[in-house]
Picture 1 (cartoon, helix red, strand yellow):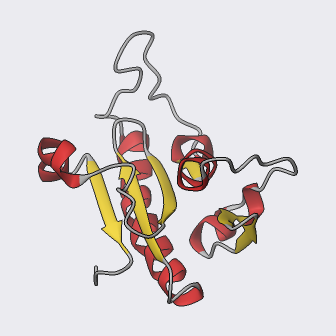
Picture 2: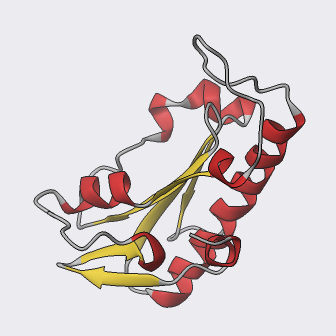
Length: 142
């Protein structure tokens, strides 16, 4: 996926699921649609950086390095951008967009009916307060 595709993602609806068009695999099994979207629609932001943040042991990444910090800042920004784009492209559908700071990752999934989101704020209070986790809901204004 290119940087342009990260910043201005395109989405595809396949088997009732919404996927990042640029990362869509040809043989998606969507037995559990929200879980499938959560697992498939994620981007490891350090993959876009020539970085030296890897560590041999847990936590596996050095969060003090400038490249890690840059990837994390990009991830937070993308979280807002993707939430906006999903809200624009699918105004009647409900999505959650997440940033995980322990390894900078952005991901999303659709909320169907009354189902629980895959990541709930109550389970991540400490990480949300510290900025390590960001959870955006397209039904709420960011």
